[in-house]
Amino acid sequence: MKITFTKYVLAAIAISIGITLKAQTALLKYNFDEGTGTTIASTGTLSTALSLTATSPVWSTNLPGGTTGYSLDFGTNVGKFVAESSTPIEGLKGLSSFTIAGWINNRKTDEGGGGNRIVSWINNGGDGVDLVYHSNGSLQIAVNQWPDVGTPLSSADVITTDPDAGVDNWVFFAVTYNSGEAMVRFYIGNSQNEATLDTETAYDRGVTGQNIGKLAFGHFNDATRNDASDRMLRGLLDNIAIFNSDLSVTDIVTIQNGGSLSSIPVTGISVSPATEMVYVGAITHLTATLSPSNATNQTVTWSSSNSSIASVNSGGIVTGVSAGTATITATTQDGTYTASSSITVDTNPDPNAHTIELVLNGDGWGWVWSFEYYNGTSWTKIDHNDASISYFSFGANGNNHESNTTGAFAKFWFSGTGIRLYGEKHDYGGTGKIYIDGVYKQDVSFNAASGEWNIVIYEFYT
Image (tube, rainbow, N blue to C red; front, side, top):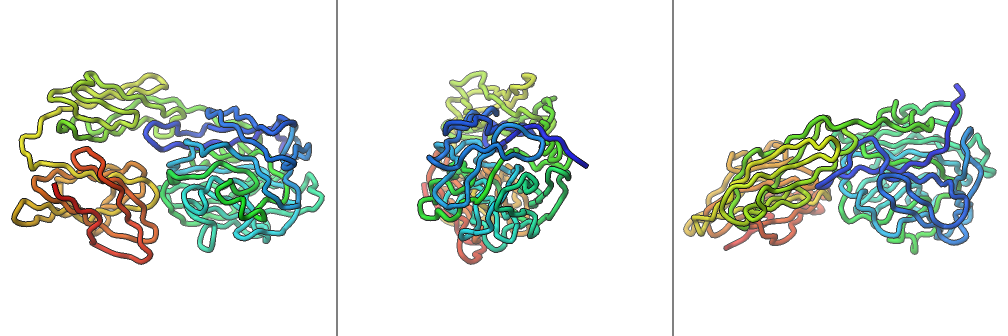
C-alpha cells in the first residue's frame, strides 16, 4: 500500500524523575524545516535547540516519499560533524521506557568502531542511550553502556545502502525500550510499507542514568567525538522521534504516517503513604500516582499546609521541621486533581533512635539483604522481609529486596549506636545515597566485576 507522509521530525523523551511529563507526547520536536542556518528549533514541550557543526551536515531536499521541507545530509567523508544540544537535556535522564523512531537514507557501508551513530546521548560509554548503524545493514541500541556484543540488534540488511541516496532508499525505523518489561523491539518500514516488528530482545539496563551526555544526531556528542571522528553516519536523517514510552505498533505507524498521538487526560491522583511519622530534622518520601498511568501530562506540584512543621520539595521529599501535624498535598497540572498525606512530626525521645535510608540513583541495580544495628553491647540483624523496613519501588527476590529504579528507597528505624547495610554487588550494579536521620552521608556502590553476596555495603556509628 502506498503511504502518503506529511513532514515531521520528533524527538520526545520521557522523564521519570520527581516531577514528570510522562506520556505519548513529544517533548522535543525537530522538524528540520529551517533549510538555512546552523540552529534547529524544537517545537516540543522542551524547547532545547540543536546546533549544526560548520560545513556539515547540510540541508537537503532529498526526503522520504511524499514529504516536504528538508532533511540533514551528513555526506560520506567522515569528520566531527553533528547536530548537538549545548548541554545534556534533563528530560533524557531517568527514562524507564522510550521509543526512538525516524528515517535514514544510508549512502555508504563503511563503519567506525562500534557503529555509526544515529541518535545518542551517551556519556562516553556510561549513562545514556546510543543507537547505531552497522555495515551489515543492522541497527543496535544500548542503554547505559556501549552497544557492544550482547546489546539488542535488528536483523541484518534492514537498512539499505545507495551511494546516490535515491528516494527509494529511505527506511523508517523505530526502537522501543521498556525496563519494566526488560525488552527491546525493532520495527522497520519504508515509503511503500507500514512498519512491522523486526526483532525483540530481552534486555534490562534499568532507567537511563543521571550522568548523561548531550543529545546528538549523526555522530557522538562531544564527550567522545574528538577521538572518534569515524563513527559518523554516512547518509541522511529525517523524522527522528524519541517518545517517553514503548509505543505500540499502531502508534508507531501513526508516527510513520506523519500523524500525532492523542492526548490522554488525567482522571485522578493518589499519594502514598496516606499517613507518616517523621522526626524533626529527618526526611520521608511521598509518592504520587496518576490515573491513568499513561496520562499525557504527569506534572505534579507539592505543597504543605504548614511548612514550619513539615516542608516538601518538588520531588515529594518531606522534611520534619518542628513538632506538630501538617498535610502534604500533591496537585496535578492537568485537571488540578489533589491527594494528600497527613504528616506527624515528633521530637526524637530516644537519643539512640535513628533512621537509615538508602535511595537508589537509578544507574543500575541495588540490593538489600538485611540491616544490622548495634545497641552498645551486641549486634541484631533484621532480615530484608522484616516489617520494620519500609520500601518504595523495591521488590522481594529470594534472599533480598532489589530495584533498579531511580528514587527507589529502603528505610529502617533502629535504636542503637551503629548500623550496617548488607547487600550484594555485580557488574550491573549501580549506586545509591545513604541518609542517616535525613542527613546525606555518602554514596555507596553495588558494582563489582564479579558477584559478591550478603556483604556489608555501608557501616555507620553515631
